[in-house]
Amino acid sequence: MVVKKYDIDLINYMNIFKKVTKINPKDCFKLDEVIIFVTEPGKAGLAIGKGGKNIQQLKNNLKKEFKILEGAETPEKLAKNFVYPAKPISISVEDGILKIQFSKGRERRMLLTDKHKRLNQLKAVIKRYHPEIEDVVIPQS
Image (cartoon, rainbow, N blue to C red; front, side, top):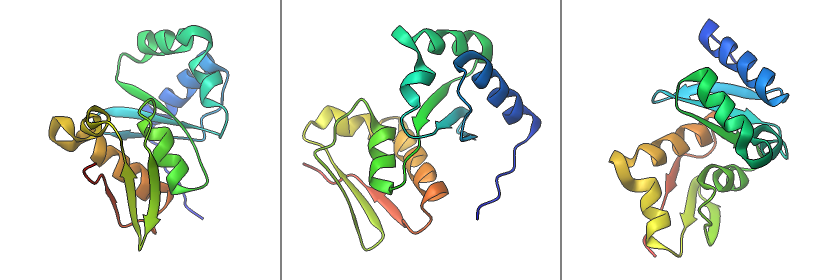
């Protein structure tokens, strides 16, 4: 069992998230100054709200960059949720390596721009929930 520790800031962020969305976050952590809220499977849409109304309220309350991520049991599903709205053509795990294949170069570049910031965030999220995954790769199409 993984014991999660939260500092006072994260607890405050989680309370704001719950107050605005009426959804209890499963987890909350910071990656590169981005607050990641993880919901139970099937709850991300409720957290976002109709027409994204909760997103705007969270932006006003948090005044920080954040991401709502739907939790998942498998690393493949978690990666798919992380890269949404991009649509990978395949996600597979081979020998501890998670491979994500995109059909469109711009979807691939979305993860690889800004010094691979989003790819590194994805790796950290996958490692947090699936420590058996050693690396995440995005092969060229």
